[in-house]
Image (cartoon, rainbow, N blue to C red):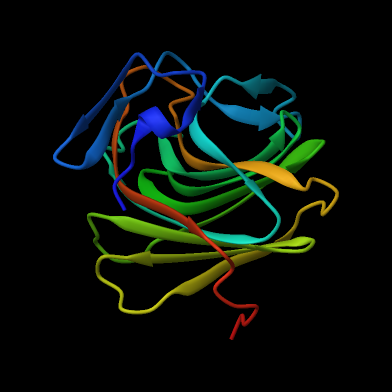
Length: 193
């Protein structure tokens, strides 16, 4: 399903966002990021996040691409309860390569990342919320099946959360990404194998 920004809400609107040929084309502002404390010591809540609200359990899927060039350029999906309770996952540019990245923040942020070991143009993400867990999967346009990235704890006390595309450029302005489609449905399954 194509992304319709008029049916969603921006947290920190970007300087440029345009729907063209059924996709959302975006460009980041100066030194935008989401992070809370750990290791680096800073607290940032300035990234660009286009979302809709969802109660209870769900499966969200997103397909996107980006022009990753500078350290920490990133695009993907966020599930957010508030400024200190959220998860973001997607592609992040670090060590000169694209990495599948997951940051889970419950007061403080943690970060896991691994290099995607093949060429691809588009990444797809699938995040399923089941009770106290977020099951995070990924698939590139060169892969036929979904692969597990992480199973993360997420407080079930947050009945309603915001979910949708997210992008940031902590070192610069002008990172460009394209969000091709986004859906939120009832949970597909509890199976992780």
